Image 1 (spheres, rainbow, N blue to C red):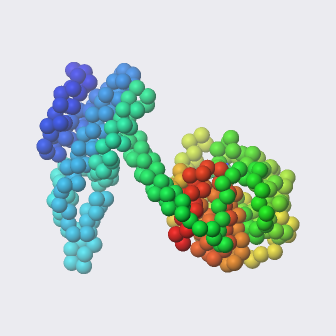
Image 2 (spheres, rainbow, N blue to C red):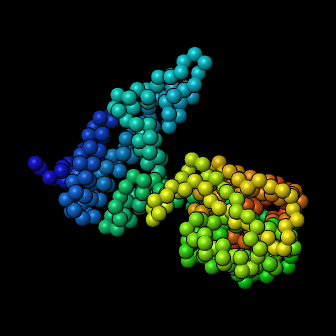
Image 3 (cartoon, rainbow, N blue to C red):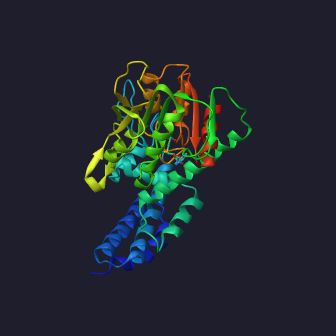
Length: 359
Ligand SMILES: C[S@@+](CC[C@H](N)C(=O)[O-])C[C@H]1O[C@@H](n2cnc3c(N)ncnc32)[C@H](O)[C@@H]1O
């Protein structure tokens, strides 16, 4: 049997010439066979990436091809199912081609995402990966998301430059462990970083909550599950344990490979300063999806709004000492609260300000 890698150079040449989806798919198959062979025969990263690069380039070209096809009215790129009072499936050139070539809609969608990627970003990712890490379609698409997030962040942050001060919100640029604030708050609602190296920040936020909360105020902190036992005991040194609520993230499980768990909820740790004197509240909150467009650890506005609107009264004040891209503050402001954020990274401060100024 010939070594499948031997066919790659010809496949690369053919890809440049390919005119039909059939031709492109053949090249994809050749590249996939070479990729599988390189991995099985442990030929090393260079051989593997040679094949993987041809495959990703072929997928991008297939995406360009699919984008040009005519679609049925109302059809989107993700699905060719069209709801219409008379016809349930309106046949389009696009759906015909997918069917004829046995292309799953998810693959078609991913290839078109590759095709949408700016040439410079696509080429740079491939260039940076060769010799460094395996090239994969999901890796390339992740790069696309990162570059889109960067652009969105820059656009929002630029708006922040000319924003006047507001009486309803404030975002401080600084370190929450040392910053001085000259006021107190009814609630602290926050989402500190979860990785182990940041664990001490749960002790810090509980310590500083003694100074920042009015008597009877609550600290509500989101956290991961991995170090929960340590977090409870660190925070209990400074505040009174009050309750643990559930923050549900349905439909978007976080795979925790070290413990073989796919998690769809997070604990909300609630501690009080003295005796809580606010309203009665339920202990399950729901997010309709996370939002990583402005911050890699961003929470959804819907989830933060669910928490705030069910626990905090309009007109009360909220502090988020790890405000990131400002999601808690946006939700609080929409609930007619006075909101204050602290954030270490200046870019995040500007993004938070930009979002708040738009409300
Ligand atoms: C999990 S993120 C918060 C994301 C936020 N909930 C959102 O939806 O955008 C935690 C944030 O805390 C910030 N941070 C980390 N250490 C900090 C410190 N000592 N003081 C202030 N902010 C800090 C990080 O820069 C990061 O933006």
